[in-house]
Image 1: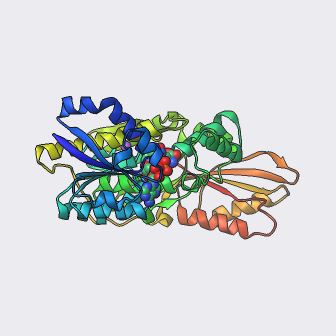
Image 2: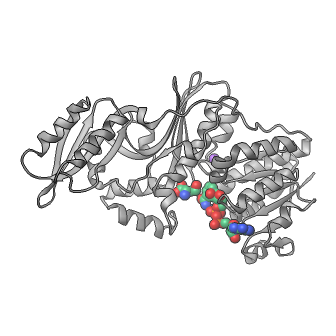
Image 3: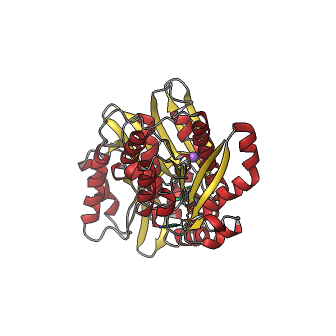
Length: 427
Ligand SMILES: NC(=O)c1ccc[n+]([C@@H]2O[C@H](COP(=O)([O-])OP(=O)(O)OC[C@H]3O[C@@H](n4cnc5c(N)ncnc54)[C@H](O)[C@@H]3O)[C@@H](O)[C@H]2O)c1
Ligand SMILES: N[C@@H](CCO)C(=O)O
Ligand code: NA
């Protein structure tokens, strides 16, 4: 049976979907009884639609797709939260099922969009929004539902994982690693969503909402990126048996949901430490299943389109069967977000400081004043005349106290020679 699809966006992911359709359309019909018929294509590039043979059904105006009575299923692949919000909300209001890859939209307007889907009795699917081609939304909503999930931990941004891997393995600095990532097409010309941790924050908001059954939005996530991570940090970490990853973490604690994105030191023996380059991985701990890990390519035309088209086939199959059986919103709890200040963990702190007598002693005094116990302190190589890097690792301490220590040291006359780097340690 034919299911009529309107595709909005023919960039990297949209074109990837058209490739998959060209290669596998007949398999979908044979195996799942789903004859996907693309009846409208919209983007700002008519040439792409023409190249795939959809010139006749092309429109540059998405309203002509979401308001077309013939379209049953809208695939939103334009990104962002402005036009994309109008696309998804209008399509749902008009009784059309929606498949999207848009993490920014789902992490900010998920609740509203699920309500619209429920009101219209249609499905809203978004597997590609986290981990690209890696199945993770599906497993959390289906195969792992028998569990109480205590922790979700992801390397969910390929650009920054590639950069950190280059910095770690080849000793290149942040700027060179970024240029390399941009030249290879991983990082955008404006890389801030990746390097400042916002892309990962949207993804962990989505995963935490599903894992813990309580709505987490982008603004709930404390996000720090990798701009301040230096090769000195990576070398120091390695010497201690750790690597540094931009981790997105969500954990269920007695106080609520602890959700954050920041550079994190992980023991080299941890499974996630082996995830390098542009690869992504998501590690999930459930009370029945124990530890599980999902690994693969988080970005790119093929991986992202794989997840989008998997959703399209599933939703279309339900339409053919005449059912609405997708697991919709599961946020039935209303758990508080644990304030970042209350976090208790171990910390690595690197201070670029003046190389003169008394500096170390005065810094040690500040740690003592705030009750922070030091596990180790190492002075690493002379970077430039008159300045050294001093690296502390603490025992478990409270974020609030660590911030106070750093602020107090920064306020001392003529001590700091650059921005301190704080990396939380996950054992
Ligand atoms: N690229 C990836 O690897 C990847 C992976 C996972 C998820 N995603 C998500 O998929 C979505 C699409 O990403 P992409 O990389 O394909 O983007 P892209 O920039 O390559 O393509 C965007 C497409 O949308 C069209 N478009 C933009 N605004 C429009 C408007 N107002 N009206 C009509 N068309 C419009 C553009 O013409 C283009 O065809 C985003 O939400 C992104 O976060 C991307
Ligand atoms: N910019 C993302 C890909 C899209 O989710 C990344 O580097 O992983
Ligand atoms: Na996915």
